[in-house]
Image (cartoon, rainbow, N blue to C red; front, side):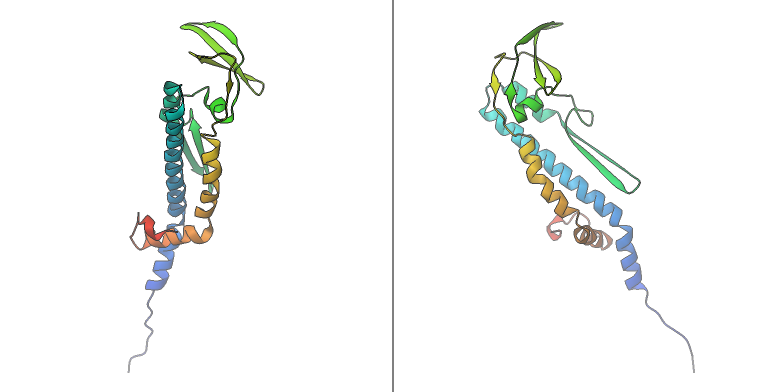
Length: 181
């Protein structure tokens, strides 16, 4: 007669693999949300371009929306906007989003005249502004998109959702977004 113990650790190994994929799952959720948000911001700027007489300016908005994702010490930081992640700063992005009145402070600049306008207590400079002193209506091209996307990010980062993504990754089915809700 043989005496012994036989144990199957495949379930424990599977659960361990899921736990090992939690960090990757969090990163996947963050980067997926960031990519979708940038796509929506670019579409929002493009829609503004269609209705705007300042097509060149809104085109600059579209081309200069960037991102930075930093991680470390169990935290993630995401920055999205113009002038981020190696993209150029678009000085009129804020006034296009929030609206405001340009103040006709014409200043001699290297390539001609520039227009200055106030954003809070900070003076920003523009070149080639067609109507100095005009009221620019708020378009919400940035803030409206972010307001809609923030709850989506919150839902995507819920522990049960991140765990589901980690389970999918552990099973080898990476990239199957249709299974992630």
